[in-house]
Image 1 (cartoon, rainbow, N blue to C red):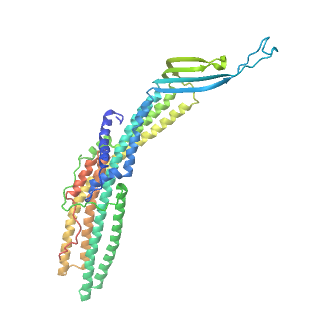
Image 2 (image 1 turned 60 degrees about the horizontal axis):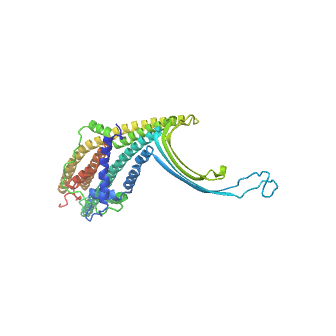
Image 3 (image 1 turned 90 degrees about the vertical axis):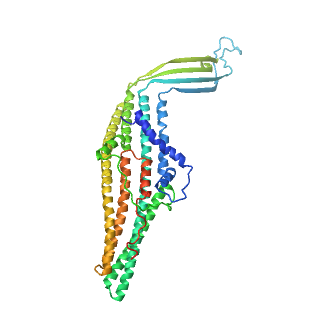
Length: 480
């Protein structure tokens, strides 16, 4: 069953309505005064994103396909009126006697006739195969537009989430770079003091200096990346996001999946994947194109009614105007006999296009399975990766503590402390990135299954700001 069926149509319409209503409601809202979380940014995007607004108008325009297609089944009425003046010369051949007595033909004066006509023609198609195919096509085109609009809405959710999480990750990278720079600057200062008093070699000082210079360069790159990410979100909401909310400290559990097995997600995607629905509609439209082309061989039958009111006609023949009123009603049958093989050519063309669209449909179906499988693996592996990185962060913190203590008792060097700190900061960054990647993969998986909506974004927002992530980075063992 394709999108033209009423059950799927009602399902599509129910998914479209929230986006339309949300846009109408958001139009009265202003930019939030407090730090904006992901849902605040999403609501701004509903109103300001040019790509989504364009999709709304495209969807609105596509709705007119249905009345246009239906028009071919309804009657047409035309009104034609003519008003004109005729000057007529009538030659009268004289007989034996004339006004001059010469028997020569006399040309009388001109006859002037004013005539006008009013004609109303009503045509009701009874059988036009092409018009029936066009009407069915229009319903499919509306269904296609509905699916494309929901795809645009889901794409907006994904773009907002990706842009928002990219900024959060970029901020983490900046914090990592700043924390590394601060820690290494302290180690550099200590190395210089130790060298001055003779408790360490110049090698330790050079090592710390090299790492400090490297982290300074990394900090510049991280700040640049953060600015780029903010500009990306600016393209969506129309302003530079300087007031984003930040995740809180206490970690919470990650979101679970609605369906436990990959095959369950694949089965759902085969029914609900929007790209697949669009391509199915395109294929059905191509089939109707074949019917339209074949309709060139079929007769047409119309019911025709004509009312005509004419005044001052017939003067060119009789020289005297007369009035006529006529009423006609009947059926008109037209049967095409030969059109230079044009119809056969159009049929072959439409069939070839239909086969091409069928292959596109098969490719879309296979790609849907591939994307669902990939995103499912990204989610499931992401859960395992986040769990492992949580433990790695704990281990890295313990390593920093023990290495710092070892340095104080003389069994670890300055370089050992720097290496341990580097591992710690890398673990913090990797954990944040793994969490963000997991959340994005979960959203993309639901989008591939055709089930992504605003509630899914709200769940992610709740996870972020219902304590999920660590707070700002601090150098380990700062109190020592």
